[in-house]
Image (cartoon, rainbow over all chains, first blue to last red):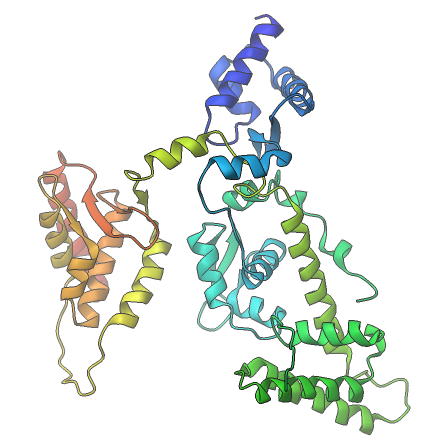
Length: 178
Length: 251
């Protein structure tokens, strides 16, 4: 298959998909005759092409795949177009979310201890409802075997992260001065 | 008197604010000074009739304890610094606050950046039922338990509640393409044991992929429906087996 044609096919596959698409999914659709490195190369080409200022959207690597997303500078326009509530987060929900992101799997008691003993059940509930976190198991060596919480794939999608290692190490956030 | 009080997420947040305001060295916090300012803040809250959360009081006690230990410590270098635990809690909390800023600085989906499928979803929204997971059901159960009236006096009776009966009941309710509303059924259940059995039955049926629990929109009505119709016989056999298994477990 010509590289030009392959490029068109890959572009089309990403365009119609609701979820981020990875190299393997693309290979499954096209066939094994095309190797992953070729697909990867084409994805990078497409990324470069759409990153140019002439396009309104770009190809973003997120949650283990590739996805077309509108560019940030268009947000005011798009918000005007679509009458919907933009994603909002409370301070407490964000604190709980960042603790879970870095310390997962983590129990509610552990989260609350790190926040100075603040009741975090409301924030956990909000995050569960928004499907940014999930109950990932139980801590068996603690009395009462409390639930442990972890982040979800949706968390990666919402915050535009490739995977969890895309988060900067927490040590980077430790400052010598307040 | 008008007092403008900044609001804090908790005692650590307040302490970090006081350290920053006074330009204290976080590794050498003047405990008596910060304790005084901390307590002043709490008393201002009280003056404004604001409710002071218990964690603020707990921290006040901790600060006073550290203050006393500092006084008793003397000059010996070898001894452990009583502030150590507090300092490391503050540093790690500060790091998570930075992590929050990092996350909020990202290009957030449906706030800064958008997907093409969004428009499609908005249009279909009216008909879209989202499937609920067992953990959603758990949250729901908590709500139901809260809503359940607790009689002040109750006769305690030992009643054998059968999950199998509930399974059969749900199967019957969902036969011939029928659906039922979760709320309607639950509102009729007044007994905790029956509720637990009912939820267990739904969970078991969800696990076997026989029923699906869906919700139209957040906080909307919840509906239970059958996924397969043709396996009626297998189904009943499965239920009997499940009943036997449970009976064995009970013995």
